[in-house]
Image (cartoon, one colour):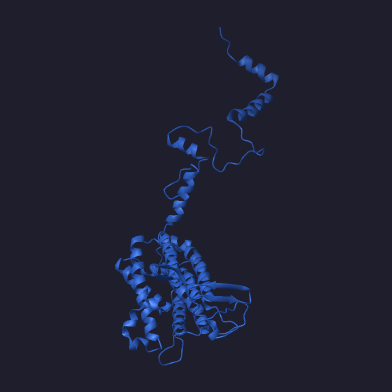
Length: 378
């Protein structure tokens, strides 16, 4: 059982980690796979819960996710095999299928997953751009957590550095004995920040289906371009000494930025987003309406069909009106100002001052005259 002694000398952190989490019947289960599985599950639950916000059928979206998983695994492996500089797969073609030995590329997984997921969405006749928006938010969750698998394996780190957060372990000593860039941490934080920003954007500012996906592609591409430039184990293009992930990231940034400019006036939306654009497309926020109904029910205040509350003072008055009972003496007129003293008066109390004022206005002569004019009974 191999252990890594990992240090962050600049900030005084020292930990010992074991890449293997546990064994079952002698079979090892690595932290790498467990963390990827956790990231996937959290991403799946988040996207499934968000389906109502995006006005998307949960079952159809689940089918797209399953297709995306299959395509993602195939794409990640093919990407790695195609750009691997060694002759391992030429000498032993069967080793292409040995994915348990490692060798999966994240960009290949994203491309394959999105392609197969989009095809399934099209088959189910749901908005492909909307599916891509939702899937991109899930990708950020999965990538943020999954990158910690690289930490457990002590891989995917960068070049030598003297920054306070530099990392040192048995694996990094081949690059530097003083410390290297913890690239796994950079990408994990970059994806976490991107998720928080795009989550808020998707709920309040999204103008058209596909906009969040383009922003994801732009955000992740920028981060990956610079982070990949720090790494020492990058895959290179076959004929030109360029990091393939940097080439893909740069292309993604350019294409995404161009399309964001071209589509800047689009307003084709099928789910949550900008309130004005939702109104333009006659979209009702079902989640907000449901919350409004729940709150009204808890407060015993009836609500109208559109989710707004009634103008009654309380639920009891509303129920009496609906039952045909009178609440004339109980209901306070809507918008009527309260008395300056701040205390409510009953109708009888309110009438007393008026009667007293009437009596004070009548003089004795007027009273005698009124008595004389009154017919006397026989």
